[in-house]
Amino acid sequence: YVNPAKQMAHIGDYDSSNAEMRFEWSQEVCAVLRNVFKLPGFRHNQLEAINATLSGKDVFVLMPTGGGKSLCYQLPALVYGGKTKGTTIVISPLISLMQDQVEHLLEKGIKAAMVSSRGDAGERRNTFQQLKSGDLSLLYVSPEMLTTNSQLRNVISSLYYRDCLARIVIDEAHCVSSWGHDFRPDYKQLGQFKKDYPNVPLMALTATANERVRLDVGFNLNITGCALFTQSFNRPNLYYEVRDKQRDVLAEIKELMKVKYPGRSGIIYCHSKNSCEETATKLNRLGLKVTYYHAGMEPEERLQVQIGWQEGRYQAICATVAFGMGIDKADVRFVVHYTLPRNLEGYYQETGRAGRDGLPSECILYYAYRDATSIMTMIDRDKDIDYDTKEKQRTFLKQVLQYCENQTDCRRHQVLQYFNEKFDSKDCHNQCDNCRIATVCEFETRDITGITKDIIRTILAIQDDNVTMLHCIDVFRGAKTAKILGAGHNNVPGYAAGKDVERTDMERIFHHLVAQSILKESAIVNKSGYASSYLRAGGRAVGLLSGTEKLTLTFLKNGAAKKSKPPPKPVNSASKSIAPKSKTKPTKTASKTGRPRFGVSKG
Ligand code: ADP
Ligand code: MG
Ligand code: ZN
Image 1 (tube, rainbow, N blue to C red):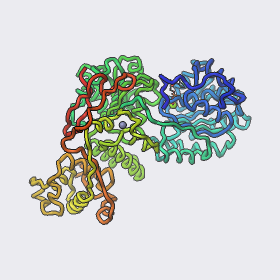
Image 2 (cartoon, protein in one colour):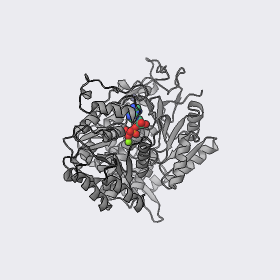
Image 3 (tube, rainbow, N blue to C red):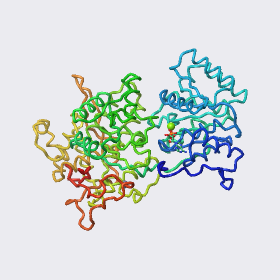
Image 4 (cartoon, rainbow, N blue to C red):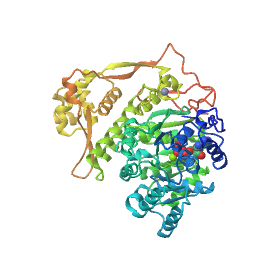
């Protein structure tokens, strides 16, 4: 990730000794950058991508959110010395996002327009007229317009036959992939472009680096041999932490906003419209300037909220994931996930909205296993999605669960691994909770194969009685509740086999087994219409029982604190770190699980 604040873009001046400046259009490119976009230089990979598309190549640009993808296609649209001329067609999934971009372009004196379901017939006719007379540098269209509006398709095709179709741009290209977290069926047909117009260069852009999605996108768009521009997705200025939700979350958020970041902006992601409104109300009662934002609001109302936040009238917004896409606010200091996200890709993008200015910012995720259960139930009960989609969403959620339950591996290492990027945790510089805790606590890896087999045997014996996870844990730890005795579960194999294991450790083992598909929770709706989650053996259970596979899990060593090593050094320069607070020792308080944590120190 290129720190936009520190890195004055790498080149901006015409310098013929630089290989990327030796094209016939290089001088023109620099002039447009300076005179039209008023920027001093290029960021990482921007010039490379621009040269590739101006050479007529198909290009795939992977850049983190805020990296500067738009310039990669907006600038070449204004350069006439390349191998392409005419209008650039941009496909983008969100109307609000397109509108925003078109407005910005018009302000710069660039001829741009959009065609979406929002405009009326008159407007559309006008746009088509401009397009036909070659008057537009950029035309933004929504994918569903391409499906439904044959006139639009005809106009594009006539541009092509007049040799006036400069290039096709597919922004947020991950929407093409059904493996991505944001699949849009209308994007599937975009593969047709390369078939209809094989010699028109195509550019696909996304902030999603997951390799499977990437391959899928290249394949679906028919650009498998394209030039690929990618970079590290690590964001060094972000601090990552997963916190146990058993704590007083609202009080912690208040402290974060009042003490640590007074007057600074943030986003609080909630999982539903209701939860946005409720959380905002609760925070208001604590005297905080917070409001909410979700898809159930009128567009005008949403715009007001967004502006109010951008101008600092609201310090934070309680929002669903609908908030943030395309919103350009560089100085977001904190992103809080009030509920766990549904997938790691989305989580990465949401946290990525913090610290775009390159200054220290933090990302806090409040985790409770019960939230995973309720999301799982929501997936199970969703009538609008098919079986395959459900399975995919369950898999995504289990990956998030694994991330939250993992208390030892560097958070950066975990997230970037998901994007197939190798990251050495030494390079984290203790800017995540797990790296930081490793400097004060000792961990040990325990073999949990035996105990897991016992658990599976127990569950196989009682699962037909529709049992909850809590009940299973009770049985396994040898409790004598009325329910257990009444059902005769004190006589099943494995009863009390885990009587020596701490309850919190036992819970972690169960959660881990769910994340590993060795156990599974499924929702069953009872007679009164309530859904409950019952525990069963999962897809990997039987294989594990009979096989030789070993399972391990890392635990905090008893006694917790490391004696040999001093507590982590407070990271001194403000430009390097924010959490824990510089100049003070990290406040170490034991959480319920005995895991020390680094709180926001009271200032
Ligand atoms: P992305 O689409 O990758 O999330 P954007 O294209 O929206 O990112 O750009 C994010 C911000 O970076 C915008 O404010 C944009 O003006 C700014 N930006 C882009 N390129 C440069 C550059 N070369 N120098 C300075 N600022 C840039
Ligand atoms: Mg963008
Ligand atoms: Zn780390």
